[in-house]
Length: 366
Image 1: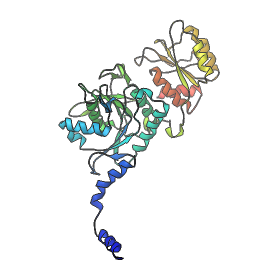
Image 2: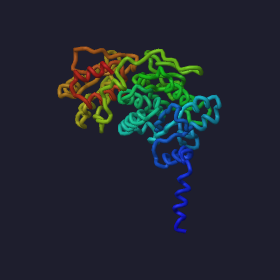
Image 3: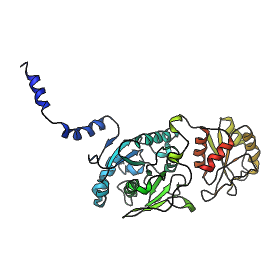
Image 4: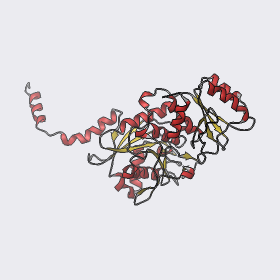
């Protein structure tokens, strides 16, 4: 009997366990709570990393489902997608599952750090971030500024729940895969894919609750997705991703920046109250003509600018307007960014400098 363990060990040593590794490894990774593959085991396939953050794209009338289940349902229900979906390896990081209307700066920074980590894994072609539509445009701009790679980064979502009539999320996801695999998507920064269109993370805005709601105004889409190919017609010209000076690894918290609107009889007390709570910068959602504040707001804003608090002017008419750079005031001109995106860029700028001239340079370049 004393020889039995030795005999078992010798017998096992004669068995080639390598073929079984591909069966057990995904289970080990799954139970370890880390990124794991969900389709195929062919190492020659390109890898697409998926960072799942919840949202309607992985939601049904019966409740939330995993993005793995969403992909499996697409493959089962739409045979025409199988060739594309089976041509890649999906590696999923199930990061968070909360409504994107509840995202704080912590979630946005966490998504950016995660994308930076997984995009450098071996064989990775690019990253798809699945998210709710409430704040997808903010995520897109954060990633446009913070991802340190030229590989495609695509944010996609859904206006209608998975498995319902008119669901748009399934098509958006399949299109996102096509965009990541397109060689022309390299170097385009973070992109939003919806309704067979590709928008830049810098300009994209949600304009309604219907499919097709994401648009870039008069600047137009970067490209379109059709059954036979992905076609790009323009590219971002402002600094982004690998050419960005911002580093998420050095950012623990974001500077406090508030948005104040312009309208007749606007009370300057709101500006003074912002200063009292320790604001480090203010975005003015000003008149469409030049982003100017209301006359009663101006003296309070100039006083804060004199104390070193940057004031950025944006146009309340939206992304179809540009606030020109002038030397006539002490404020920073916010170019064509809408107020909530100008806020993100000012927060990024304040992680590096509080000099208004440097901040103006950043708004000019990004």
